[in-house]
Length: 125
Image (cartoon, rainbow, N blue to C red):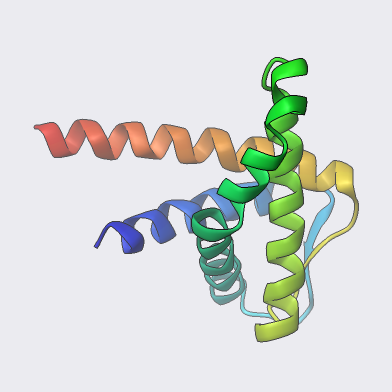
């Protein structure tokens, strides 16, 4: 159940990033919500498996940059998720540059954090 909630939160956050960040495009003819949900699924799976390893390996740079390098790690994981989602599912979502991935990573992190706080408060009630 926790995985499904995490997938839903990530999907909503990816949808917000697609809507806000100008360097992310959806191909003509692609079903938007299906594409976003598939990218959210791949991103959630990578967040659970690959991202902890990347965070551990980049720990010295993260400490030196006072935590700012973690945004770069998020952007790299997002680009990897985009590449995998297009390769496996042909989602039709394209991130045009690393700058767009960086902006999207920030938006996804903020929206995910906000939604998790809301869900956590509702769970306590």
